[in-house]
Image (tube, rainbow, N blue to C red; front, top):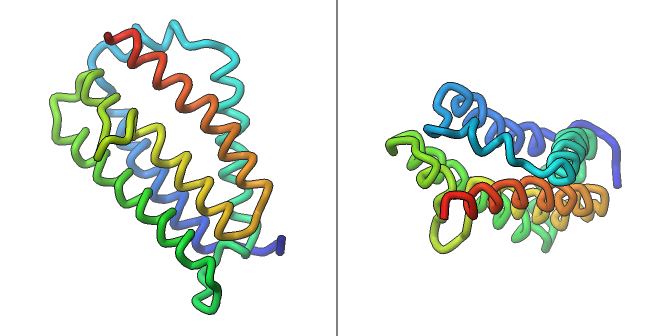
Length: 156
């Protein structure tokens, strides 16, 4: 692991944060009703995971593009997940913005808005050979996906 700024990490975070900032003004109908039932353990995992992923993707230059590496396929897969994440958000913003829309799947990926960034983070960790990001993505996934699956179960 090599310390240094990661422009790939910055792009990755922009792809994560911009739709989420737009979402704050476009929350699904009745969202606040579901937030009240979130399990504290999932919230802790999500918060810790988010903070770790955010820091780690920026401070290790191992995530920057290296075309001479056989690992480039992991970077491509990671950004493919992020591209699908952006498609998920476009679809959501064009929808009626219901809870069902928010927790929809995409190409068979359940709760795509939660699952895709976790998978992308994990794959970026593999690309950068960065165990800290891999572990952080798992922590983030337990919380983030856990919260969203519980919300989806409440809908059903």
